[in-house]
Length: 509
Ligand code: NHF
Image 1 (tube, rainbow, N blue to C red):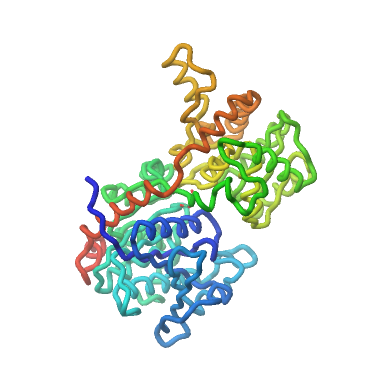
Image 2: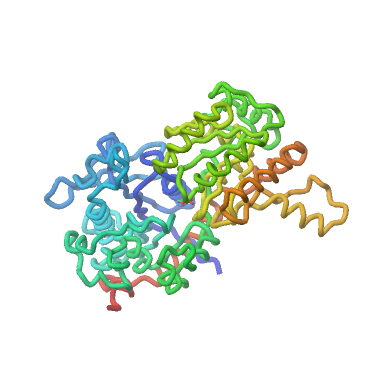
């Protein structure tokens, strides 16, 4: 049954938010979901760490925190969906160039104290001890960085309910248990039902075990993480909390990602007139001084060069792929070894395999607009946003059938076969629901085989254009997700632990 609508005060707690600080898809979601909630009539604030002075430019101080040099500042800007509250503290000092990694690539050594304190600030806002005039109904925490917020909330009297969203279970925020004492948290939290994890403490478990409701970013991933294959050791706990676990597919900000009015591309286009897309293809290749024949497809990659994303599979498949009429364009940085291997391949095949490893939002838009296909051979993918951006720009994803990819990419051959089976003389162009191509296994062989299937469609331009239009026509905005989150918020409020008592899990040991 649909819950009756009421306007809620929601505090988002996250380590990233576009355009202020972005490492991955988390940042896009933490910008777009508040926007959609605000449009539905909710009052939203986002709590973020201030990683450097550049983030607090133009912000006004709300309050100082404790006796140290920490404070809370508010940033209001036309490009932000709601006021952003910045936690300024020496614990985050020096992270200006990257929130998670030191210049040599290693994680910052004080992550536990920094994000532990961050969670404490969220709980202080929830309890009304830090700000007197704004109390959230819901504290919506994202990924391990915010995992201690529901734990701190359990230790302070608050009437707010907590929701924890898993964007990627592979990052757990795992530390030595001594951090509990360093943070002034009780040792009783070092318990298998709470934070303990194989002799360490894992901050993500704070969210998984203590939040009133847990969500993740696609229905398929919500199922997958209950299994040892995708559960990263948390599958037991997640199965235990299954009644409180919901998979809600991410949307995208369709105003920002709109090929008909995207300031980051030069030639606008839409599904009715794709001329601009061909021009964007030329423009994209011109960046590297190359052109492509009509029968050559441009296969793009936008994303981190990691094993999760299957960057190693792309490299393994490369010699085979380059036997085909293909040009590959890669935008991404990531694991040092993969970065080096990608750079070496680019040097070896300069006109066929083109790479840019700088973070460049306009090149990302340029690839979504100008490529024919998007490569995304991920081993696992909680939701995946690149395939959604690509579809919006008529770029057909070639991906693995996992997580959110399986929920959003409908295989063109599978659909064409189903239609042909159902209707004897079906129109060969029929692919009304199809949006891309799915590989069964994350292997280099399957990837090549799936690119081959995509190329067969590409070489029949009538069918290809129908497929592009079908991908572009898919509804990708936040409207469905935002209603699903409202239901989760209502459930969290209805089932929340009584103020001051703490979540059920904290009472158990
Ligand atoms: O889309 C935002 C993103 C997901 O699959 C993505 C991931 C990180 O790995 O929810 O978070």
